[in-house]
Length: 321
Image 1 (cartoon, rainbow, N blue to C red):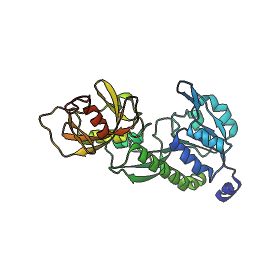
Image 2: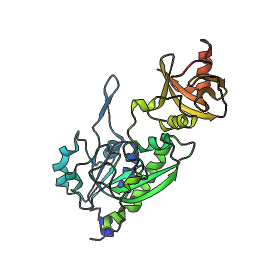
Image 3: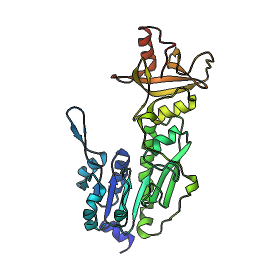
Image 4: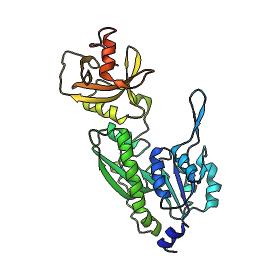
């Protein structure tokens, strides 16, 4: 059977594994062009006081397209089910778990992954956040074969994009999700007919995009304005950078680098209130905080927040920690 026959008759058995919005967008592109035999995604979550059940975005796409959805706690639990399906190809995209060898060996065309970085840079579970936080000026998508180690397999194809000063984790996420969908569809024919490349990764060039932890979210005002600016936009719109003022958490969603210098002030001290926010002293000058979210409240302009605080006392001179 040639490639044309496979595409026309929809006989290729593809299993897709993924969970968040990023992978749901990639899945939609696949569904428009190929028949998906089954979807594997993370178990449903319960949120809020009423423990409302929330489906993953990938599961929602599966339901809307009447595709079998499996949600194992451990992927090994579905080994026999997957084996019985006799998959030709397994595609993963932000699934969140490393596949064991017995599953990697199942499909005749292999297991491929859509990863949101230019491997070997930023291996791991948070490459989009880390690309901005670490000050990368470019990133991209890698389509790769999977092995038993995290993001270490041979590269099939890559495509690069610029990270702009205006990018946040949210805007970069959306750009990369669309790029991942496009690149995967571009290389699928070569994967199916075996004409694709297999490029070994250079382990001397490896960096990591580790999952964001709570300690990564707290702003350290002894750092430079560039570092803090990157941290704030790299955590926007999830989970958000934060600091403490008067022992209360305040999330910081937007900032701007300033050229002002305040040599007599200490790091974390509020310097002034401006039309576009309030300034905070940092190691190499000042950063202007533009959008905030006080504990238990909605997002608001930092200027409005500062003016409200001024009514309660002297806001300028307070210390953010």
